[in-house]
Length: 100
Image (cartoon, rainbow, N blue to C red; front, side):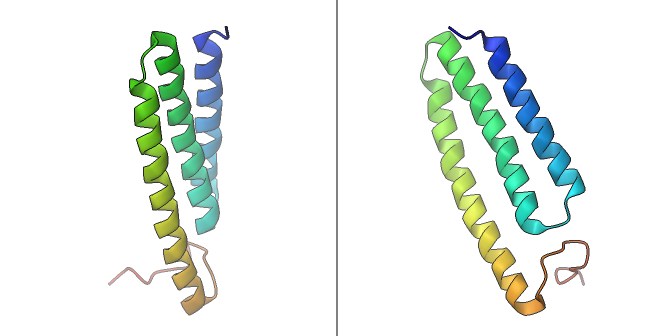
């Protein structure tokens, strides 16, 4: 059986890669992908602790989190496609359509 610390280390690595991507990328699609990577690292933690304690609570929470992340990604992609159709760019530094 793989020790719990390996799962936690992998989740920390995935979360740090996602955090680096969110902080450095300007493209909206890449930022959503990095946020999904961070959510998947949290799901990995939930499933690892669920397996470690022999309960299904973490796996159930991970399934809800995956469903919520899919809905968030669909809405985010739809918003970005609408912005792209209006302005022909998705660079978040150059967009100011939500400002007064």
